[in-house]
Image 1 (cartoon, one colour):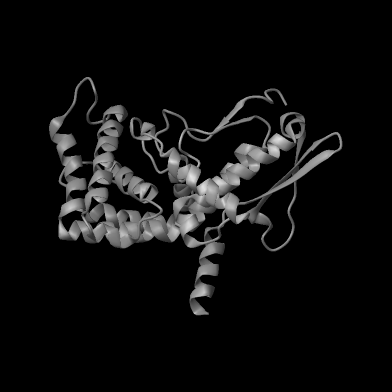
Image 2 (cartoon, rainbow, N blue to C red):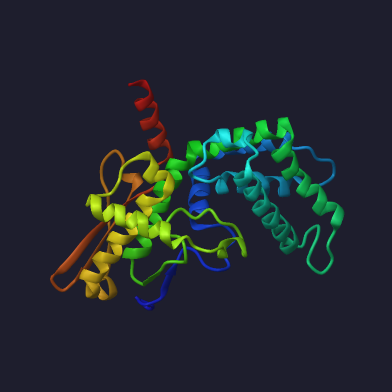
Length: 291
C-alpha cells in the first residue's frame, strides 16, 4: 500500500547464504525434532576439545546441509576430487569470516589463530579422514533427502518475488540454483553461456523440461523466471499497479497453499504457490518407491 515500487530481493552482493541454500534450510523447520537429534549426533561426531564450541559446530553442519550442491550425489563425499576440494576451500573461507564477524571467539581486529585452526580442522576431518568422509556422506544424504522440498520452497519464493507488489530484483547468476555463501563467494563470475544454452533448449522444446537433470541443474527455476518476466512484460500495469488480495484455500492440503489475486481494471492474475511441502513430498517419494 505504501511502497508499491520497493525492490523485492532474495539475494544480494552481501547475503550470508544463497537464496536456495536458505530455502533448503527452511525445510528444517518442518522437522524440528528429527533435525535436532540428527544435528546433535553429527556435532558430537566431530573431533573437538574446548574448541570450536557446540554453537560453532552447529553452524558448520547446518551450512553443510544448506550448501551441498544440488547436482552432487551423496557419493561425492567419498570422492576427494578437484571440485570437492574447491568446495571445501569455499567453506573454509566462509567459516573464517563467519567466526570473525560473530566476534565471540575471534575477530578481525583480534584474531585467535588457535581457535580458527581448530575450526578449520573440522573441515579437514570431513575432507580427509575416513571417519570424517563417512560423516560427510551422512550429511550429504540428508541434504539430498530434503533437497526436493527446498527446491519447491525456492520456486515458491521466486514466484512470490515476481508477482507480489514491488520491483523484482534478480541477483547475478541466481537464475539457476544459488548455494553460494558470504562474499566474496557470492560474487563469483557468472556462466552466462550456460544460462543462454539452457534458455535456447527450453525455447526449442516449447515446454519446461520435467527431467531430474533439469531439477538438479536449476533449469526449472530459470524457466519459471523467464515465464514470469514474460507475463509482467505482457501485463505491466497489472503487476506494477494491480491490487493484491489474499485468497483462502480449502480442502485437505489447504495448509500447504498460498494464493492471491492481482487485479487491475479488466486484467487479473491468480497466483498459487506451495507452502511447507516436506512431509507431502516425502509421502509421495515413499509411494513412488513402493510402485
